[in-house]
Image (tube, rainbow, N blue to C red):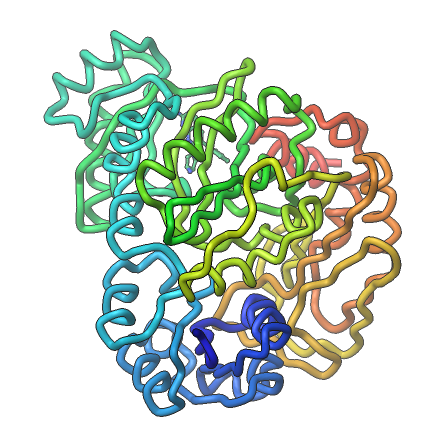
Length: 449
Ligand code: MV4
């Protein structure tokens, strides 16, 4: 039984988790930095504890302060949200050593998937399709050359400790491999203190498709279909959809079956996402995220599931209570991330929100922690809201998103809403005919004209 949850996060995701707790009759504890004393997640929680100064390192990443807050308030579980400590295996371990439930996977699974080489080796052994590449870490430059010749150029050298695009270098031909090898290793050492690297064939026009998974502590694993997250700029997702405009029901069923069987054999518990590159009808596993993701609402809308409620039930030791055939996907959902940024330069635009009006109506969901008069602090992520729509078809979802963006008012700071309008009006986007490179090119073309 879980009766009080400490939420080790801020902003919209802290509110999202509070909402699930409240509906389940669970008390909530907010933690906050001194910069967030006026934040909505603090106002709406049952209790709140200040855990340190503005810098995330000293507050939202301060394990000792967060555990103390949990002890003082008598919380029996901690939800890490996304970012911050959500994929920190030592944190998950420490939480459990203190007799609290960690609302997430085991520390061991977080650790396994945190190392991208171990993640791939594990998935390969479980029959999940991968990008052709090295079998584990590259021992030396000679090994890099040999694998590159075998899979064919261009190739990518990636950091084992990487993810999210850091420590990644392309070699177009054999002439580039030495440079890619040494630069990738130097970057990996500087950024992660670990210079282990591996090699993959470079896919030139893939989509980023990810599969939402839930597993309980009793060996049951199901999936809730995929999200297409190809619309990213500099590895920051901007707009996500469920399902992917590129997939057929048969493709979804097959990758879903392979993935859930693999995670069941691992004994995976709680929420997780398998990331794939999808090109020419092939899925290639690249990474696994062992947390709830920012874009989880599009899956919730299409599957009519409360993923945070499920995470809490799973952490309490409950059975899923349903199987794959009970999960029905209906209609289409789109999420627009609304960042307080200049829509052309993407420079952060912190400051005071003078006027705020959230859109509403059928099939519209706004997940946000801002309010009129709120001062967006400069210390954290610039995402201030997520606007999510659900409609019977993709075309209707696009029209609904356009309508909802027209209703949305955020005055006082710049936001990326004007860019979202342009994307939604673009014929290529409307056809669903895009890859991971589309947004970068679209943005460049916008600023030129
Ligand atoms: C790749 C790739 C092409 N081929 N791997 C970037 C972040 C990290 N999660 C993996 N990434 C990529 N891996 C192979 N073998 C292209 C990317 C990539 C990318 C992937 C997903 C979404 C956006 C991207 C933007 C640039 C590069």
